Amino acid sequence: MSLLTQVRMTKLRYLLVALLAFSIVVPAVSAQSEPQCNPIQETEICIQNVQLSNTTATPGDKIQIQVTVHNSGNETGDAVILLGVHQPEGGYTYMRAEVIHNLAAGQTKTIPIPFGIRKGEPVGVHELNFMVMDESQQHLYDASGYYHKVVVEENKSSFDPVGWFISLGSVAQAALAISAFVIFILTGKFVW
Image (cartoon, rainbow, N blue to C red; front, side):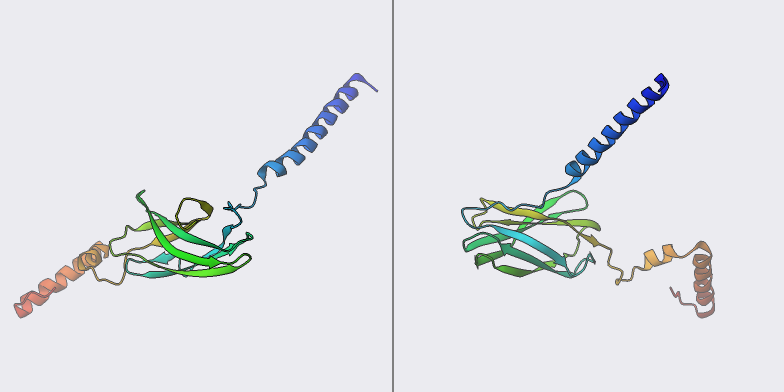
């Protein structure tokens, strides 16, 4: 075997070893562990699922949220569901959404939470984040209910005549203005 062939074989071995090491290490690094709840004594109340009735809304709309929690601990416990809302312009608010009493070990419960989009809410993406804490809000059980997005859009139902006129093309604006002027000349009354 020539020296050139031996060098190529050695490089090929190093390449195969590197590929084997890469194929073992990458899946282990990229695999994410399941979200873990933090038990308090023998109670461990975790978020299993969050569902939103709508992901788009306009100011004045109500969204129905369903948060499913499960007590995977060994004791009955109480908890509080907190809702954090990250506003499009960067503000963040927290509110106490619901209190759960006497959730038995192994029990699952779905909690309905009405969420209203107030008039004057900024347009854009609102990020809803859910957390479960003990009733005194000193211990965090679970914070895996993050990143549920609601897009707040402008209310299209109210008529804005200036916006409507501006949205017309220049030809339509000119035709409308000429029509109003002709009606004024013929009737003597300004119609708009």
